[in-house]
Length: 116
Image (cartoon, rainbow, N blue to C red; front, top):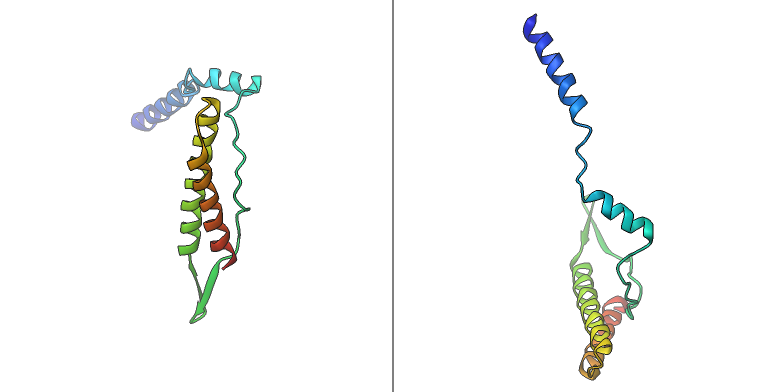
């Protein structure tokens, strides 16, 4: 009986002391969010994301091929990186012609992937 009472008391003690688990840096993060500061947003020139998937029904089960989705994700991630570099180069007043051509090629690849 003493063991049960001991376990219950320890559980209550741990529960009572566990309320101050918040990290000290959380307050600063919440202050920054309240102040309205956020990361800069870069507008992408890529076409909107598609929801079209290729699904096959085999024996009453649906199988989805995500190969195209993965390729689209990789292209969009590359496009975002190129657009970020373009913005940085423009801020530093550097030439962006090569990056612009890479962006155009990536947009073309995404459109081709989506359309067909």
